[in-house]
Image (tube, rainbow, N blue to C red; front, side, top):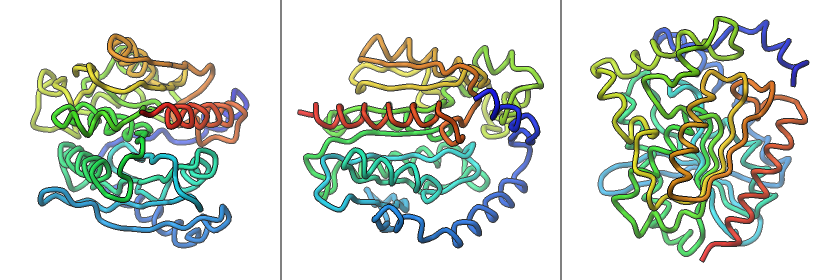
Length: 305
């Protein structure tokens, strides 16, 4: 991990400064995905694109199914700082999860904050969750919610919003969250981040949060589910959480783990010498974290009911 960090130190830090750069990055991402459109076939899998619809709301989703009958289903929220990314970007991770855990994966293609307020992204994710938890194909199957970075924020916010539908929430058997954002005013580790942070521009994160929520003050930003850290975790499922020791968002995970543990079983891991996004790095650390996550998901699926 430390060897890979030397490479990260040469890369520019990701920061939300405007709405033009994310559009350019998104275009490059889509271009690269055209070239790699057949990558799922290497895993013996295919993807289906459909639209989740609930009470007049709709959002595109991407479904990857196992070759046989699934034992459960994963609802996946991709990362990308709310401004880049799509449901296809996690295909490799999701394909490994499908094959290792015998689950179907439904990845949400929520709108991005370059054109839509963050609340709109949260509405898309809630729509996908309600659709999945109500649809006939996946009836009676346990559901695991997975989110990474901004997707971790959206996953936690979705679970809190599902408290309005307790019969649906009880179908959720667990959640796996990687280095999410849970306080849109900035936790202590965000505010204390130095200019030498890796991958993320730590000092600029508070400004980025304000750019994403331009018409709010900090008191409004700290309202749940917008800032999940301040929500009511009663009735939520067990959680597996990961954060990197070198991530400005480290305290987001540690703080929400303490609050979550008051209501449900929580397993939290702080990974040494690890920066934001570490599950994508070519390291033994990433391989072990992902293997542990898949084993945890399989246990939660087996324990359902």
